[in-house]
Length: 511
Image 1 (cartoon, rainbow, N blue to C red):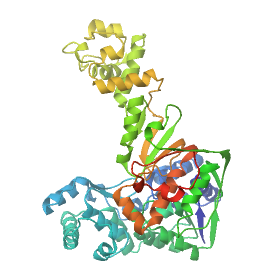
Image 2: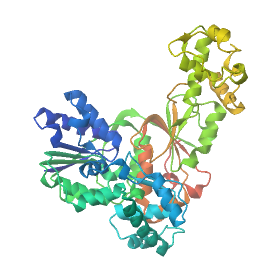
Image 3: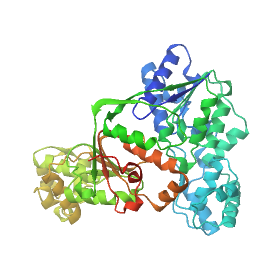
């Protein structure tokens, strides 16, 4: 029996799956008889950790089949990390072939291939789509500066390189899994985030579920935003013809009613091929605002998620945050380094009489410059078993000041000092978790915030994609607009010819 579970944004799709896992274990299904595969390692780990906690199980032994598909292939084929292509191996290959490769690696999180070299990207995408390389090349209209014959020759050279060195990549693992016709002994199978699986992953899934009693395929085709990496949402949608049951989770616990819900529905309504489904928003009505420029947006309060179609569109937001003294995170990095943050906080506590460990003192010394006497600046003479008052270090360990941080931290550049002073003057809380987070829409999938800001700007590649595959961008911006729990703020592009949302909602009144 096969069931599709459709989970619109915020409807609790993963929670529903985990509850089913609980039920099967309670009804006597052994954990090792359950396969739980997700597109991302994070989601698979979440399921394993919850089941382990509830039933006092060991994640590594009892729940070894809660993982991503590529890691399952890795396990079943008894591969080791040393036999996998690394970034260094790709760079060596590039040097051998005379092509520049700065970045080339498979993500451990979701198995997708990321490279700054378009030849390598095209080669891998054709493989996960299960297409002949040259047929895939010929089918694309937006491939720029990639020569057809060179592409084929590089593909052949890459095969030779891996064979000579005895190496494999994640796509090789799945290909080998399929070729060896490996099956499973699962009683129950869960496939989460199904909309993001590629054609080759679907082949693997079909092979796994051959002898499975019950299979649950969960996802949301409307949030299928990884087509660029080879995801085959059309295959997911086509499964409606062969499954026994389709369930739709119809209550969102995230999206507020009113204009935000209406806007998201208007966007997704433009998608041609999709599951027809509706869901109810929360009873609370959301707020939708539009701005002509980022400088009009007041982010002085609350938790924000700032989204764009590409990272470089976020540069204006970073500058705004730095000008206004707002604490932010971009690409997973805080605008204030964690070590500096701890040094600042500990310095103020120290000045007020607190005792610090030798590690905390050494961290502070890094920023004090000449305010620490020669021979003491690295804190090597501090004892690991002791704690220190500021008076102790002034007396015996070379500390020459106990003034406020901006008069003592000589190691700070003027920009950083002014930025921190602006934050403090504005009452900004400087802690380990910035309240403003920036991300691409792809990077924020699954995330949410009370206040979401979306930039409408599009890259040239996105504009071209829109011309031949509009559904891809409809889904992308639908995913962005459905991250908001209370407020959605939309900034007009610098160039109105390079916008997305205006093409769809220019008649929409959302001021």
